[in-house]
Length: 168
Image 1 (cartoon, rainbow, N blue to C red):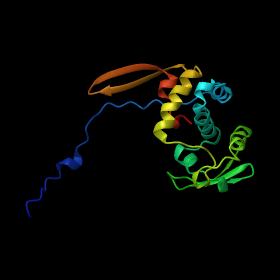
Image 2 (tube, rainbow, N blue to C red):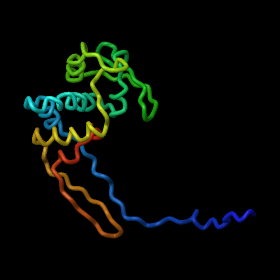
Image 3 (tube, rainbow, N blue to C red):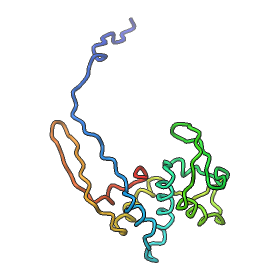
Image 4 (cartoon, rainbow, N blue to C red):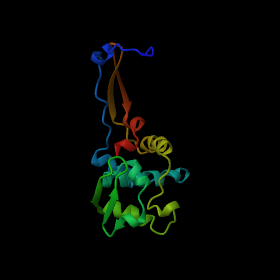
């Protein structure tokens, strides 16, 4: 048998690991509207685009990857037609007045590949969302629990520290 291992004991190995569900971070409607309407200081102009893209994702339920790939040709009046990156689902999404207002803000700006929105890298947008959330005072305490070995660890963070594109 060419020296190959024939022991299949690993197939039945099921370790008993303590796990906890990862906290799902999301904004309440009040927090979302506060962020959407938040007046940014002039020194933080670069956060406006991040805010717009994040809010657009919240208003449409788009993942970051789908917002990143959204083209003007996907927009048909007050709907958008997309094929999602993650699941390859074909979707037609109604655009509410908030999403339409955000799209309208950028309709005369040119972005690479005729993209509809000024979407930057996921890593950078996540960094900026934390900064934006802190500035806007989105600081409700969020408790997280996880395990290292058998030791339970509970931590509480202000919500802005946990903000990322997944919150949309």
